[in-house]
Length: 146
Image 1 (cartoon, rainbow, N blue to C red):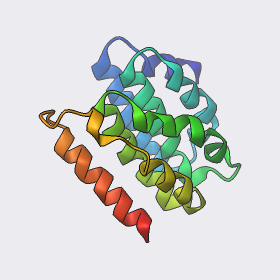
Image 2 (cartoon, helix red, strand yellow; image 1 turned 90 degrees about the vertical axis):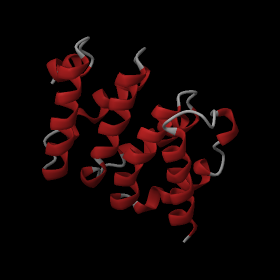
Image 3 (tube, one colour; image 1 turned 120 degrees about the horizontal axis):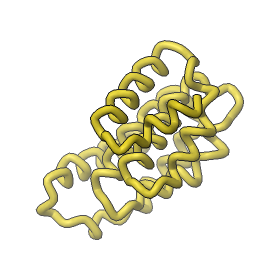
Image 4 (cartoon, rainbow, N blue to C red; image 1 turned 90 degrees about the horizontal axis):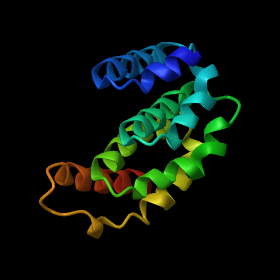
C-alpha cells in the first residue's frame, strides 16, 4: 500500500487524480482501502493542497467502513481544513464530508459546530468557486440544522 500513497502524491497530477478517483469508487463498494486510513490521514500533512485534499476525501470515503472510530479521532484535525485559505480546498472538503454525515451520523454535531465557525468574509466574492462554495455552506448549515 506504500506504493498507493506514493502514487497519490505523484508529480503527474493526472495519474494521481485518476488513482484518487479509482480508490474513491472502490471505497464505495468495499472496505478494500480502509486499512489505508492512517496513510490517507498522513497525506493531510503534505505540502501540496491537492495531496492534502485527496487525503481528506479518502479518509471521508472510508466512513461507511469505519467501525473502529478512526474518523472520530481524526475529525478535529480534518475539520481544520474547513478554514483553509484556498476556497477550492474548503469546497472539496465540504463535499467529502457528505460521506461522513451519511454513514457516521454521530459525527454530525461536531461537523455542524465547525460549519458555524467558517468565516466566509475571507474569500473574495469574485472567485469563481465562491458561489458554489457559499451555496454548499448554506446547504450544510440547513441540513445540519435539522
